[in-house]
Length: 134
Image 1 (cartoon, rainbow, N blue to C red):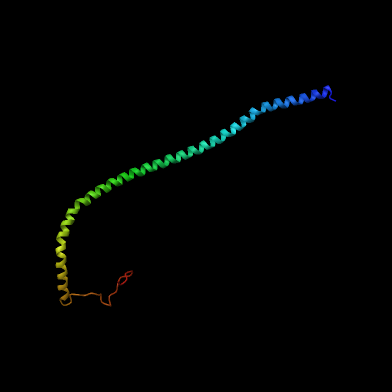
Image 2: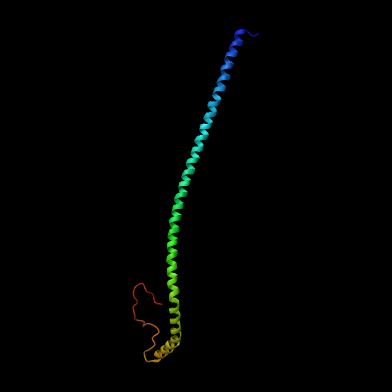
């Protein structure tokens, strides 16, 4: 059997718990929201660090590109100089080719002269240190 005092005590203890639960739910939700915000800020910080690294890398790439451009211009100038020397080299080749056979014939003539052909060094010759006989 319920007495009036017991009912009042049960109602008195039930109401504050319900009210307290209703009041603490937004605080708990706010705490979760603050935690999420903290995680988001951590991730944002990591993204900013990564963005700074990318910016640094982009600066290094730009500097390398400028260096490559300078090198390409130097190569272009050098290639132009090589192209300019090609006609001279062709003329020299035309002059040297006929002389090759003459030089070979002259070499054979010198080899036939007394003391003209010495193919190996004398055995008593000392070679400098570090040089091997070939």
